[in-house]
Image 1 (cartoon, rainbow, N blue to C red):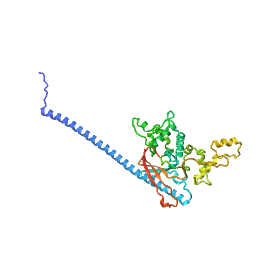
Image 2: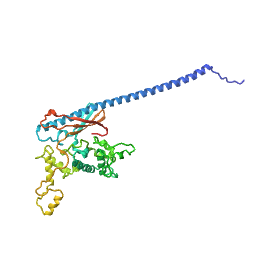
Image 3: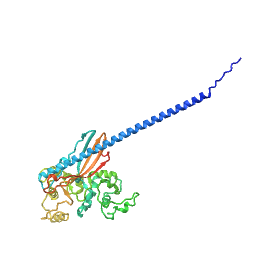
Image 4: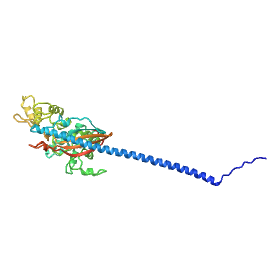
Length: 383
């Protein structure tokens, strides 16, 4: 007799319980996964908050160190002026051989280091001087500004159709108060208002090199190339002949190459002091010596007439050897470039310091240094 297999049927309640058990297991797994995801996100956000807080604290700490560096720069400049005042010389003298101009090594602090340098802003070409109150000086400064652009290689892009003459004219239009373009390539309000993002010319002096980006023709590379040679001070501020850069001296075209003037001011002897000219008369004497022919014999009357036509002094007349422009042997405006690196996070600051010269009879207690501006820079621009 054949055996017939029998299939056992489970009760309906048992089948339902097994299905529910599977659903619960999946739900529990999903809840655990979601909880793990939430915990991971919370931990990640907490780490970000800790890093963000740490960065903010490091930044604030670095900024306080930079303020300390600024106070140290003020102290150094004050001591320098005290020394000049104690010498009782007719004029104060600032040169690159003084303590404020000496390069400094990084100074270790908690969590990192700080370093900085003080730069004489009057050693650079003051762009605003092309609007000097003296018309003759202003005209001369415009020529010198164009020559400086040539000296430093502006425009950087050699394929550019912009010339130094065009840039000089446009800078003048940006500064002057009228609406008449200078020369053939000047730019005024009507030109800038026609751009995709219209704006007007400032019609006032420049205060920061970044403003040059608004003047049509200048590129970021041009500005970076020019940065170490220009300043933006009141129009009649003088150039310190003792600290002026060689290229700036060449742009001024004083009758001697900038390298030779640099060598002469470093010599010792009469009219010199601590690596510079004691006064402007020493500079005038140097320029007069360079302009005076070594051979005093006059070969012919025609030669005399030719020299007189070229601007040389006629026999018996004193030659005018004074250079046109505002010059000095001391400075009042300085730039502090300081950097603080705390927990590997750099903070850069540039401060413009104003140290007014002492009046006759003033004491050392009258020395005051003012911070005209502070600017935090891009950390990639290392000091």
